[in-house]
Length: 454
Image (cartoon, rainbow, N blue to C red; front, side, top):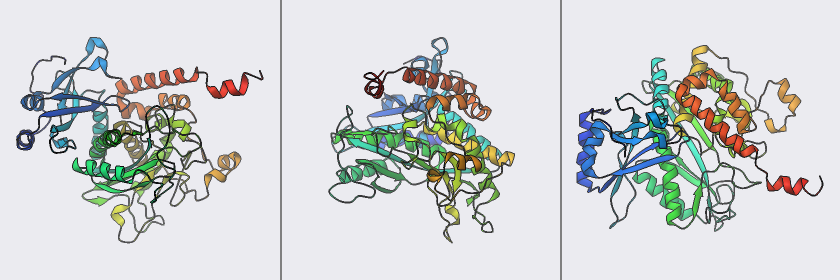
């Protein structure tokens, strides 16, 4: 671990820190894991003993930021991770096992200032803008899909079940139940779970929560899903498109803005039951969708999922019922005004949730602040329209490759402001490198198609 000067950099109240220390003692916790993510959303962790926790809460724990993807260069590498007491949770455990807790950290510089390369800070800044505009909560409900395979070395499935399968074809019902118990033990409420469309594809849906809390839940969810799978001798993956010819895995994300406990998206007098706030928010996301695509779909493989015909929306439009549109408005039910929300269907579960929620929020706020006009909804199945018909209706598509998405992002003033210059420049650099490495590869498809005839 890096050594940094002690400065009392606490970011939480003294009472909250005392409560965590008391709980560690009461529960008999033997190790505390401190978590944060790199720019791409990979979870990073190190463990401390309970004896070190008081100092960590008061002053943070130093580490070498130059070893973390997208963080600082080696000449300015000292970083400090400060645990957030509100994220304290016991890891799933059984009688006789070592008791381990986890806390998610904010990353700061040695002088105690928020580190501009910390994805969690990017989301905090977006939420600050939201509050400055008069809202107090950005509620988010992502639906993460994933596949279960027999190992990480191939895509041999466990079943051939389909959507909502409840037969012997669904070989992972008990595994899903075990995963739900583990998630709920970590304070993550679950609404429902089911088999998804693809063979051996699953979905466990978390109950909506404020964006920062939900981003923390999301990185926890991904780890728990993988760990429970590994304990059962199988492999879980959030890779967006692991099987050719089958649906990929998405992260449909439900969003709403609240103020003083009331949903600001609802308007009973509107024909769509949408307020001007909701219309501006949706218009902002549609307007900037191509620019933020490289954030919510950040991998080369993400664009193998975002193709017509596999339930992944690629056309930039909105609708109340049409699931081929980028943004869907779930049907209004009288008495459910608080549930009015927009569902954006293009993100995938391998994104960095902190950056994704931040960019989605910033795009929506931009639409509200600048008064973007919401186009008419598209109720036609957009996959059935010709390219000419889509052009006539002014419907554009998401980028078709990571390379195209990064080009769009690199020109975006909104994303530069949303991510901040530090992350923006490093993120563009990282993703361009990934695309360049991919595009020079020779694939088996090319060899099979061309070698014998050219």
